[in-house]
Length: 130
Image 1: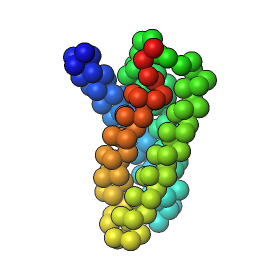
Image 2 (image 1 turned 120 degrees about the vertical axis):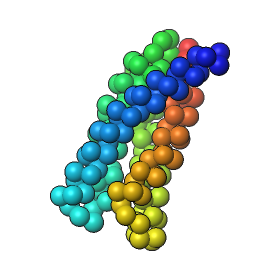
Image 3 (image 1 turned 120 degrees about the horizontal axis):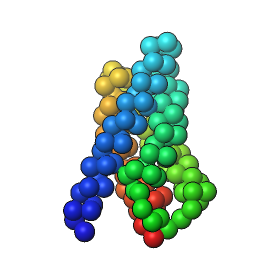
């Protein structure tokens, strides 16, 4: 059981790095084009990353028999994404707008928190085992 969870966490980490790279690339690209628009860039990056993440997590990270079908998983994933968008945007707003931290660095800190929340939500709710 522990070995299976460890393998799953490792797959989540690898897939997550790919998704994070895509998400952050969109964020950084938009922020460089639209300075000061860190919240809009955050939302765009999260949506692009989530689209790739849904498919990769379904078929790679949490591969195997799953309790729910793709439609229900997509709806659950969208709800989790909505929560993550709110969480990341509030944290980014606090760090950048209130504490005057650099948006690029603040986003990496925020992502560390959001990734942990996302793993738990995905494992226990979206892609739960059958």
